[in-house]
Length: 317
Image 1: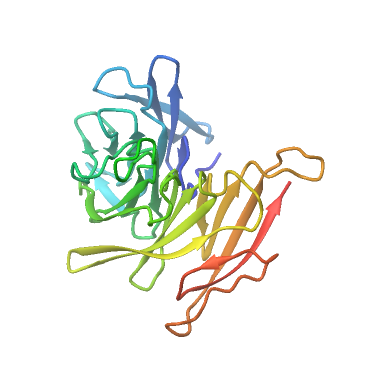
Image 2 (image 1 turned 90 degrees about the vertical axis):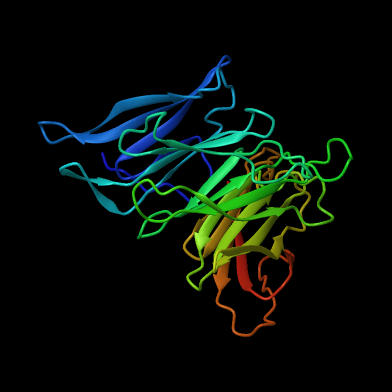
């Protein structure tokens, strides 16, 4: 058995080369089990349970709603080699806004963790912070983190869940904490989209990071560039992805693989009128000029905003 790098999105199970974390959620409480990959005397590799994590705020049904693992660069732990990993757990139903917990390797104890609270002030009605979390996987360590708060409301209209997300980064050394880079609320006109219900983040390798945020209620996926220059972060909307089909869950899951962004719609029906689902993908093409338009070459699907270019396609059952 071998460890596998987790995908760059949100899941209730996360796995790295040496650690596995999964939610254990019941009708009364939520916990997260931590397993380590170990080699037996006979040479076999097995996952052994290392710890059960739970909320210190009391029984929490939402603890473990989202789980990711952020890997780090190799470090020396006492006299043995280790990896500075973080198990990051969302608890969107805790408190008034929700929390995110980041546990440090190698012990993953309650005393060795960072609690991340909502970064917005009282003028924004933040809800479900931690419903989606994602890390950008890097060869030098996973040092960027995105956290969604899809139930966040704007204005005084009850139930107007426009959504929001925040981006954090950390230094690539043992014990470094996540620090806020920027935060973004849903674009105007998308007041019921629940932006941040799903998230993915990746290094664009040009000084920018890309964040894909699903808005399944609005049937859209929005893309932002994130920059962090001289301790001044910025989240800028660059694209809104949608289809010309009548769908009701576009962007339920999003993820990056290399220069491709994938997003799903589990409600699409096949020719037999069964909900088979569909996976859309857009391939990033390096921009040539500042005003290069978005390119969409598949079935007339529409894209908006400049100046990047993508080509698209889809897969379905």
